[in-house]
Amino acid sequence: MEFGSVLGYLVLIIGVIVVLVALSRAVRIVPQAVELVVERLGRYSKTLNPGLHLLWPFIDRVRAGVDMREQVVSFPPQPVITSDNLVVEIDTVIYFQVTNSKSAVYEIANYITAIEQLTVTTIRNVIGAMDLEQTLTSRDQINGQLRGVLDEATGRWGIRVNRVELKSIEPPASVQGAMEQQMRAERDRRAAILQAEGIKQSAILTAEGQKQSEILKAEGDAQAQILRAEGESRAILQVFDAIHRGDADPKLLSYQYLQMLPQIANGKSSTMWVVPTEFTAALGNIAKGFGGGGAGPESGPVVPAGPTVRSEPPASSFKAKSLPDPAEALAEAQRQAEAATADATQAGTRSGAPFDPTTSAGQRPAGPRSVPSDEPEPRDPGSFPPPPPPAPPAG
Image 1 (cartoon, rainbow, N blue to C red):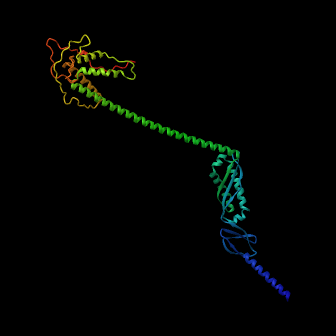
Image 2 (tube, rainbow, N blue to C red; image 1 turned 90 degrees about the horizontal axis):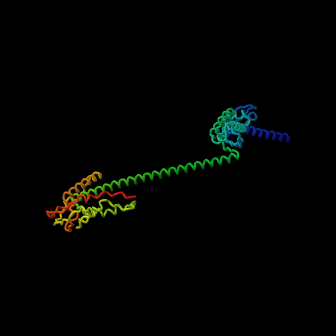
Image 3 (tube, rainbow, N blue to C red; image 1 turned 90 degrees about the vertical axis):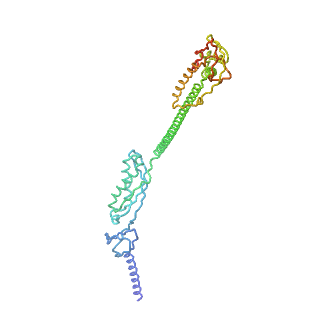
């Protein structure tokens, strides 16, 4: 009895254990983003998606679980030879995703290792057709070529390559030193170009400013000369007009002419005095004006001057004329001066009579002068020529 009861308990316990094991193998819970490949009696049966599933215990077996998320794999740096025989170290990163768990399990033994080796061979093929400069400046082109080759090769494995990135490209140390020198020279060249451009622009702006300044200064000088010439022409016109209308005495003009002689010869470039030919004639006229006789043999007898009456000039004698053009004003002044000289000659203002204090200087005597009938009134028209223009200073 006792042996039979013990054996019964053992069978019961074994049965419970078998049931528990069978239940544990029959019920499978698949997590999210994972697929399970199930084999029945060693042959592919089905793929379990995320959720609760029941399997035949001891008949169905889970071969492998596949992660369906996008995966990132970084491979160690690989030495690659460029077309110009330089060895560079290239470090790559691959982003891929399993799209078919059955193919990933049954078409390739280890798809991670397969992707790594395929990446190395593809990089060597792509970089081998480029030189170092193209390799350093054509990363996007290299990435595109790698992705195209890898995606085509891994498609039959149920894997999709999303991206391929080159983490770093390390040339040899000697080449790095040369590249640093080249980059330094390039930066120096650009700095020199920018500095030269700045100096050029500064010089252009300075020249433009000086040009505008010189133009404005020249315009101002021209305007000032025009205004000065107009003022001088109007002043000369008023002087000649006053001489003509006031009938100035030639003796006073001769005296003023003698006063202007030192100023004529007092130029900065003059080294000697200018003595015109009319100098003696002017002295003779002054002597006659103050009661003296003529200095030369042609001077006639002195005729006493009679009582004279001061004549007032017309009201408009000193009224300024305004001419539109300075050249016309000068021409008009010369014509009026010639007319005044002719009138003075006809009126006898060059008679050489003694100077009368009661008569206003520069005015024609109003009353007739008493001259003896037996003595003709001496006249020397040639002794009072108009003042000539100033002679150029003798060098």
